[in-house]
Length: 362
Image (cartoon, rainbow, N blue to C red; front, side, top):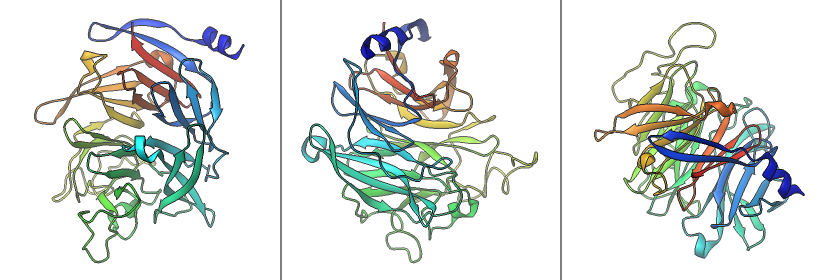
């Protein structure tokens, strides 16, 4: 009966979204709460995280749901909670999933990286790998997304935790992108390993709240998308040890007045974004599409938007400028939280309404 109900609820929209390619958009799940993270266990099963602390498996053929572990104890306040999930690049041998979540320490939220093993039916041995130095009493700007390069490194993002100066202070992890080995240890070639007074896990800094990061193995580039204040959302190309400027430079305005944030938009030694959104779209995830199913998307950035409720497509030019932005799926009218690409090139989008949409070829 549940399966039949889901079939009835399925939304079919046949439209030309990108170029002349026809897409079929199906609502395959509904009313799950805020679905923060999505990844694939295999071709038949998807793993989901909800902000409230649930980790679920969704069977893609039957659309049956079941929990993989008991509810995770998370700091589910404001923007905090259970955040991203990603399958290990060595999953065939290590059976590991990685998670980011906000951990409560002395009633303050701390962005934390955890791992768990998959035994074929459930998750076991959920444990913290890295508890960041990012505690504040503000329930905002936790980040956090996870991605991997091809050299055994894991990257994850942490927001400034609502205290702007954190992002320029390398004695804490807030406002940074972290790089670790898969076992949670520190790579010997991290940029600040040998720098006194700077935390060795930091890979880049000067970030406000990066809620999307993606390592494109095809081009060996690490991309990030982050929230600005009132205006000034950014897409950044992340480089080792670089300072991305927040809050010294920004394209955004103060919330309380039409005043520029910081000293301006440029400063020597601080990296310029590849793209700025004014007004803000409130970005929540980012990928570079490398699938073969939709040729018009190949090599394009796809990002989800919360405030402006759409899927954003941006073309990367040869000189790495970001051009030809287009906005799609606005008719769905939902805060889009995450977009992922399946092995066969289909797209899956989760929303804050608790829905999951599958975009496939028609």
